[in-house]
Image (cartoon, rainbow, N blue to C red; front, side):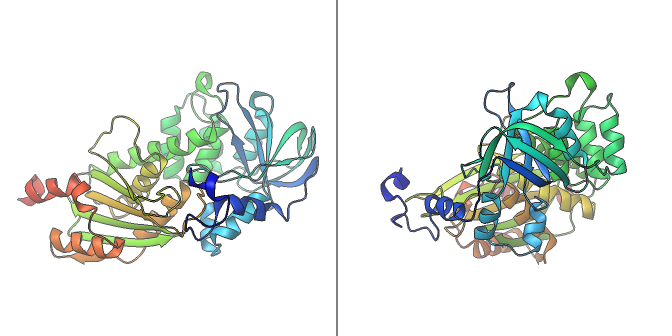
Length: 382
């Protein structure tokens, strides 16, 4: 591994060094054996499942990625914020009541926590979950406020006959965003009574993106096709997204490109492709990013009441020097779909535009959807 040889000396050519950023982020942190303040969310680990550790995430922040984007925070600022975040760790089943109260609340609750020893700094980066800087084993924990619970959340979490899939659909339809739905699933608040249990956060993130977008796909399948070919694009933290939508029944393909000298590209470019029709089998090789991008596009098609065949291109550059989690792909794709669209006269024009926007054309031979679109006719063509 190049990082082991480089040790922060810049041999990789990245704009920021992930290793050195851990130490720079550590500088302003004061380590203590107690905490009193806001706990905006919860975290459950996956190690040793089903006997997992879980607890509150403690920081004076809403822990809501769309807010970070709206505030214009850069990667360095987000890493600094997360370096000050404390993950409380205790046996999840013993803390389930406190965890659930925090997850239910529509606003951060104040907590008082005593740790067995001063919290330890251990900032790690991961492609799925948002990094956390500090970890402490919980000795005692008290939630100091009562949760303020939205009506839809209260109704769904109180219904112990309702399956988790239906619960996600109802919550999404009510306007509850996927970030809180993920919290509720993590805390063991969704599903029928006998099937409720805490879920590791990294699993819950992808499960909610997958479940909600599957439900949206079912609705989209009943809608008429788009009236024309549309292309959208946006960039967020070095993640460049281009979405090409063609009239037709639902099909989805994602091509993910990690460029040379990008965080995980190393010295060679890496290209991964995956796709689906109305159903999908197996877990995507693109991992959580696939489901996050699919959700954002499905949200758009549901909002305009249209169906389409969709190609999403993701180009990750060296600007993305620290992985922040799959929320970056979700918000980058949402940003694209909420921006201005370009209507193209034909598929060739759309492909050429997508190539210009993403910065290269050599993605085209990797696509399985494009040849299908150029050779096959559907009922929508007549």
